[in-house]
Amino acid sequence: MSDADAETGGAGEGEDDDIGVDFGENGLVPAVAQDADSGEVLMLAYVSPEALDRTRETGEAHYYSRSRDELWYKGGSSGHTQAIREVRVDCDADTLLYLVDQSVGACHTGHRSCFHRTIDGEHVGERVFDPDEVY
Image (cartoon, rainbow, N blue to C red):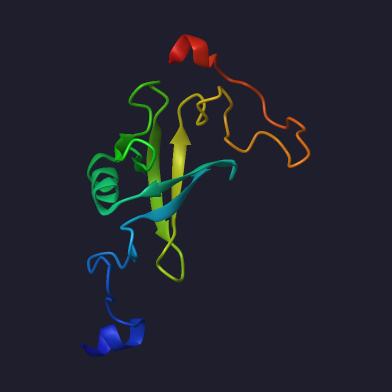
């Protein structure tokens, strides 16, 4: 291990040596998508190494769909894409933050943010599109 690796903890099992992301045993890390201007949290999804590579290559958000077991280009069906301004890695290198420019809404329910209701069921976000017309 080099001196630099010793200072940063080196590249561990399941860690991407290039950017230092630890994808762990399941090969995925959570990624929070946040509006780059307002700071609004838009959604949380999971990212595989391939999804992160595609995000970096294209400048558009890519995730891994656990339910469909496949790479997912955000906006591929709806056209509501996320242009990446910056990707940040947390201090443990096991979570990503995508700072994005969101086109229309991030949530498949038609809301701008997936976090559009409180734990008590109060709606705090507005619908920005009709999902029946989009999907």
